Image (cartoon, rainbow, N blue to C red; front, side):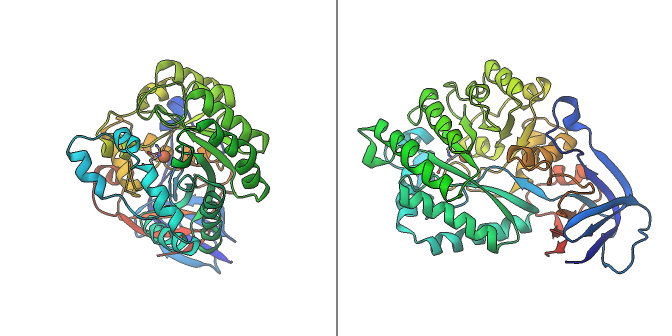
Amino acid sequence: MGKLIVKNIGMLATPEGKTARRGAKQGEIRVLKDAYVVIEDGVIAKVGTGEPEETDAQVIDARGRLVTPGLVDAHTHLIFGGWRQNELGLKLHGATYLDILAMGGGILSTVNATRTATEDELVEKAREALDEMLSLGVTTVEAKSGYGLDMDNELKQLRAIRRLNESHPIDLVSTFLGAHAVPKEYKEDREAYIRLLCEEVIPAVAQAKLAEFCDVFCETGVFSAEESKTILEAGKKWGLIPKIHADEIDPIGGSQLTSEVGAVSAEHLIVCPPAGIDAMAKAGTVACLLPATSFYLGSTFAPARDMIDAGVPVAMASDFNPGSCPSLNLQFVMNLGCLRYRLTPEEVLTAVTLNGAAAINRADRLGSLEPGKQGDLVIWNAEDLNYICYRMGSNLVDTVVKNGQKIS
Ligand code: NIG
Ligand code: FE
């Protein structure tokens, strides 16, 4: 693979460490002026200042620009058939997200479109999204199933993720979300669906090694906290690490469940109560916040500052999906992190790099520019970190380096 040097970096900004950063440490990052990074065989070998000594390497001149770690998008629903632009009119006439779901639309209409699509079609559609993410500075993506809601179609989605991981420069991390909704054929017997998940689908997913994590949508009209616990415990028995969509619309106990099941992350947390924050702090759970979804739903924003003050590590991700967030732009998420959560640019950087990596159990190898970490970085059309949080609506990426290879 060889050696790559990125030199003449005006500002290198990175969190440090191999674990999530919490409390005041979330905002303490390393900043170097006139810096360089040496990447050997895809792994960072050296970070320094001034002129690098190394020779025999491919050189990229950063021309005095900002360099950060590659962005980690730790929460997406990447694989789906169709789109849902028809819901825009319904929303403009006053229907809420849960109203549309209760009418058989929402997630359930994407389930129909995903079941109809072939695996190849799902792969090609998601590949386009991944290309766009990469151009926006994202180098690792978590992707969930959850639009199949039966054995064959959940496995089809997860196989699509595996194929993309093998064929696209972005690294993908896979999460089983069979508990994303109760499919229409089980509407009258939700317990039978939960049994199907726990006794048949989860074992099949685990045996085929198609997912690392198990997620549930713990929400009014979807899965209760008790049902969520049952499903996550079944996942754990098969080695799937728990994640929870919690407190997105109603606080029905999802965030409190984190300490009971030992969740690596809890997602959304828009209406997270203090007891949920305490539980996450106790469990060391990463709060994976999705501000573009709050923006798109027109809802309030998660209490990010309270979480940081309580010592909960905060990550931020896109939640890219065809319903509640049809955007995959993590740069927009960074803008919202500052403007709506009132986080500092330093806290925001940590949220979309190291803490995002921690939300998918990758903080030991991703999310910072330090020797031993994967050679994933972004050169920005910016001279400092403030600039990329302050500008909005433009793609500020100059160059992406993935695994030590210049991508664009
Ligand atoms: O994270 N909340 C549940 N799942 C997605 C939305 C999926 C959809 O609407 O299709 C979310 O917001
Ligand atoms: Fe989600």
